[in-house]
Length: 356
Image 1 (spheres, rainbow, N blue to C red):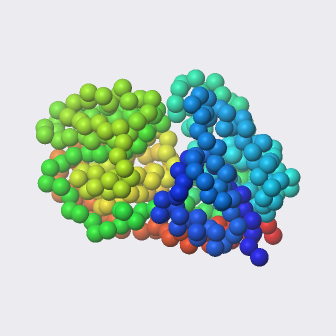
Image 2 (cartoon, helix red, strand yellow; image 1 turned 90 degrees about the horizontal axis):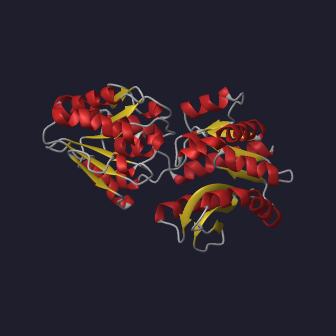
């Protein structure tokens, strides 16, 4: 008999699911009966979605979440509750009867109140930190996705029950690797928020651009720091592109740049390495699980625009260096590639381990 699992997260879904997500949930459905409580729109018997609100969407979602989890537990009667972060874990621990809570840790949970959105969020940081830490310690099991997240959990005094990456739909990025373009350029893809240090990227590019005549920085993303990149010299800014066009953007670039102050595994880094593109990034968080300095990219200290500028100039002005780093990119990402079936089997093994 398959276990029954309630999955809870802040993820936003639009139903019907895309092909990749459909494969993921089909694989999960083959291993256990699943119900998903998340945010989004559309109808699917497996999903209970909270429609987005025009005002105070996040605050209302979190305030209502314990009650919504309680209701799903009463109606679905799961064998376990699988949650995406310590904040969902805290809500589940409040709402549950006796069901074990399995917590996934994808990155530093403290980033949400310190480096994302309005600076006013920092007022919540002391309380949010305490709630999250208590949830990490009280969950029946914690699953991490990388060395970095394992170290975060161990610092909280907890030994992870399992470590394996989440399934990522990388099919558009796994075709034959294109050669580096004849004309050098850099690419940034991500939310324009403080934790990505978009302001630091702008400062670094102002230092690098005069040393890179004819070289362009392409920026894709939106967020509260949009003003930092508007009108930046030798740059192009696009608010968004369809997901299936990101591979093409990477193919047109010499290197990906990621100046984050905090980062989990960094999906865009995985995508860039799949396309054979070196990564110029800060040595923070899960970036160091993926990027090896001098082998498939260059690493610099966080919040050091001059060091970032120097690294960009190195890669974008030296075709031999760029080619050597590019050659090491695709082989380095192979251990992070997993099928939906692999992910589902490992998740079921974890659920059954906790149930025992």
